[in-house]
Image (tube, rainbow, N blue to C red; front, side, top):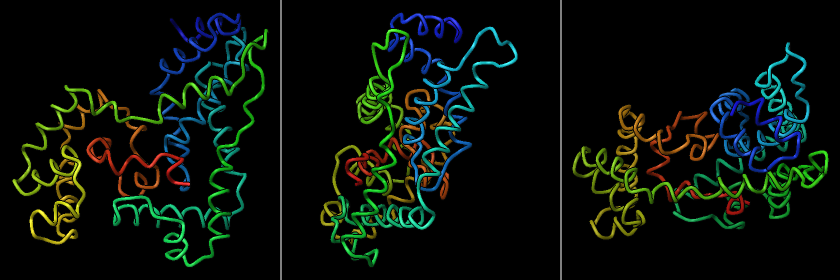
Length: 287
């Protein structure tokens, strides 16, 4: 079905949720390209992709097929940008900087500790009191509180929240991608071409699920040594363009790339497929 055909069905209240999902899937690539042009330092790509779903709903509501001068994709783009602009304008500048600092330190501690840092650890490394840390976490959480209870459809049989919740549930957990045997086979093939020491670390870390400390004890070296070898291995995989092309057919880029990391290092989807354990910092885990 075309965009216009799906929109007609939605406006007629025919299988609204299902047709919104079809419309989203049909335009997923366009939506991603629209979102990536409006990335912001305190948000992750999947945060903004979720927000884009709200933009999609708004675009459908505003779209008038009789006005030929305005295409649906053009309207969709501006609705998405407006939604992103709305959440970006709600925080004062000083809080934006605090959130950026929070996430950088969180990521650093998570990497070093191989677990979520506690509030006490975060407040210590940020050199702030627990009360201020709580305010920062509340500010992050507030960005997800969007007015979604507005009814949709002429019969008002559902709300934006219904649609948004369904979509959110789909993207929260992406580990099922690694259960795909063919995808695993592709990754294992690429890992198998790495130098022996790097290959061994990747297998132990991401296929046997061992921590750096466990591997270090087993090999009689320091965790830092394991970390260095792991980084070199991941860098090699990131530069493997053939692997990237094969993997992206199975794994959507925005599901795995943390926005701040992508901006700073241009980390590819391949690295985030392999980094499944460190990528499991869902929203609830982080705040």
